[in-house]
Length: 165
Image (cartoon, rainbow, N blue to C red; front, side):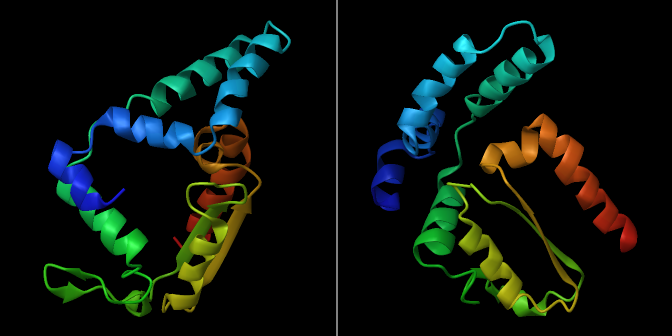
């Protein structure tokens, strides 16, 4: 769908549109995650709470301001202006080569929203001499919210920050 058509129709991007788009990225997996949840061994309250909390978070989306959506989707995704050093914000060119501070790229290996190849491309264009990457065998949400992410990913991020603190 063209960004302009969507914004012409709605102004801001409705949360229902976003939720449907995220759901349709992988509808089969989204259908069967509920069946898997129902069929699993009962009795782990913490695991149940994590599942339902994540589901509530996933579908509690506010609408996105139309112009922000336009700029992100059209300029960063469709036209790839950021990675090509052609993106301007308030008439000023954003040059990733000017990044000189330590750079940490945290990526989910099974991310179907932000492909690892897209993330790793940032390492090639940033100007920092201190570049690090943490890859984690999860999907997009699991990298941020999963109990394993809290136990395994975020301590690594904290250690990286402490080393440069």
